[in-house]
Image 1 (cartoon, helix red, strand yellow):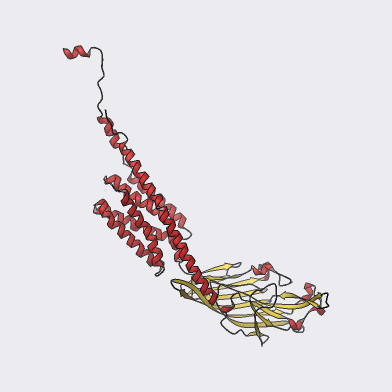
Image 2 (cartoon, rainbow, N blue to C red):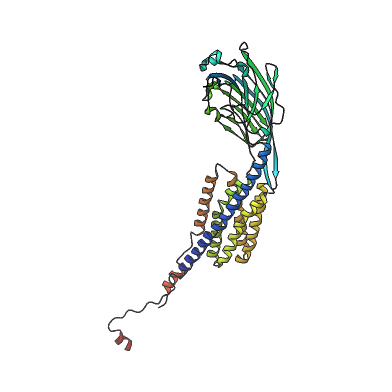
Length: 453
């Protein structure tokens, strides 16, 4: 007796193992594509750094801060030791307008901005006594104002610093201090008989990435607007009022001294103020490298789902698909990401995705005709790939909901597979073999005599 029991099941298991091995092999080119994306992103960053070094990076305006020197003692040679006390303004106001533009270096683009700001405020006469400084120690004529600007190459205008209606000369660089590393200095002798000092100046500042301010006043009123609408408000304080629409953004901050964790006057260093900021980041609507990298994370899911569809067609229609054909289809799926990366460096991400997805779908659908030799099955494959790429694009747009959309999509795909396979009898041929197998006769004593008669 000879039986085929288990033959079909064994062939099915072998096919599943082969397909699983092909999926594992595809991890190598997917990893290479990820490395290529990272390399292109690094090249873009290098181009951006080159532009930033000439144009200006993320700017954070700190100041003006009034610095009052005082004699803290005498050294061993009898020379006076000079220390500094720092005083923040009572009132600090900024009214600014930001214009964004794009600069390019070869294939890589950088978003930069030009800002025009009117800055004003008011200092009170320094209350040095609260810092345990005696009047005879104070050097009123040596007082100066510091304005911190990280990228001085971004300053576009001649700064006219006005105090109580009088223009004071602005000196490059900053005097030795513990607060500001880069900026400008304004000599501002203080008259003890004057109780208030109103200041104002205009500042045209180039930069990239973001524009930030240190809330130095007892009361801070900062207003920014721009025709650029893709922004993020960062720092320690969010705007009290903001409007973001297709015409740009308009935001205002109101910050008071009791909202922050540093004092209005001090001596020595003040590290807390260096970490305090508020402002806005200007961004591209879509980061092509980030979006491409996110799409690559779904590559294995794409390959597995496509193989599942081919496997179902092979199982239900009894058409055999060679492993080489599985391999060629998986190569086409992986090539989609290379196309997407290359085209997105020249066109918008949405258009690049449309071109790459359409090309890959048409290629696999056309190749499916040689495997299925059935118009209906080929059309189903084309429709499946179209839906799959459309769904991935939806996931990429849903930054905060991507995990939910992906999980729901996989659940639906599994449910469809289970529904299609609900009536498949995996042991059908084996059961038929069992039913047709010859059953030997049962021998009983006396059968020979009955046969003879």
